[in-house]
Length: 218
Image (cartoon, rainbow, N blue to C red):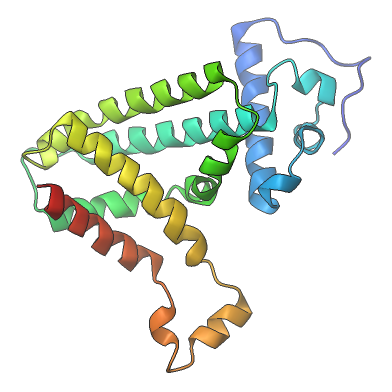
């Protein structure tokens, strides 16, 4: 893509323009984060992909970490919204039924799965106290938004238990997702009879782990 020159750039002034520019940046950043190692992502690369100049990108975000956290928060918000829309239940369900629906929804969040392993890296570097606090508060608010889903679908879970479960879920995905993404060479090695038990089926692992956790805290 050709980058806009300063002579053709017009600063976004209305809320709609600002929102549109921000969405463009986040979409471009999502592509870059998905294509290369996190440590190689730069503001210049994100700006180029978004068809921005780097100086104009800094009008919206100060660091790549701030962009990453905003993108991650947006994906979690989309996930929580789908949760609320999908769990249209009139009564409680079994843990196994809950886990099946929960996992199906999570597996559709492809970018969130790819970004989750990078979360700890992003939070540990070049993030201001304000950005970190705002990020945590927004995640807390999103977690509270799905509390009615849990109250309807599963009995006996308070807010602390739900918060703990969501943290467990994020940690589980962050650890298991990259372990389950195999290259051709890795799949070939793990197809050998003596090593096949080491090949992780992410969906199966996720369902069993979540079911065991929910039964434990219940």
